Length: 171
Image (cartoon, rainbow, N blue to C red; front, top):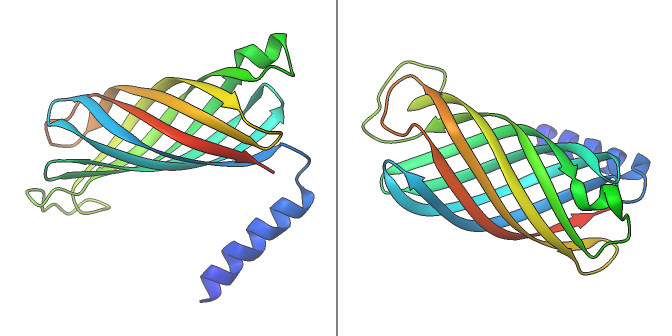
C-alpha cells in the first residue's frame, strides 16, 4: 500500500509541475511479427516526456505473447518527431525512435537461476510511429518497432518486429 501511495504521489507531483504537452502516456495493442518463435500479440504502454515539441524520451513497457513465450520488456528510447521540426501545427506526425530494452522470456522450459525466471536479454530497438492529432492532447498512433538484435543467455528468439495501433494523451 505504501509503495502504491508513493507512486501515485510522485505521478501527481510530476503532473503538477509538467508544462503543457510535455508529459504524456501511450497505450498500444497489436501484433508480434517476424520472430523465430512465430507470430503473436503485443501490448505495451509508455510514459513520454518532451524536452521540446519535436524531441523527447520514452520509457516503455510491453508484453509480447508468442506461443508459450511471454516476453516482458522495459525500454528507454529517444524520440524525434521529424514533421514537427518543419511544422509545429501539423495534424500528422512521424516519430523516429530508438534505444535499448531489458527483456525477460517467461517460458516454462527455462528454469534458470538468473535475475528473473526465464531468459534474460538486452535488446537494441528502433522504430517509426506515424500519428494523427485528434485534439490538442490526443493522438492516434501506428507504431512499428524492430528489435534487430537480442543479446540473450539462452533461447531461440534473436530478433522481432512489433506493429501496434494505439492512442497517446499529452498533459
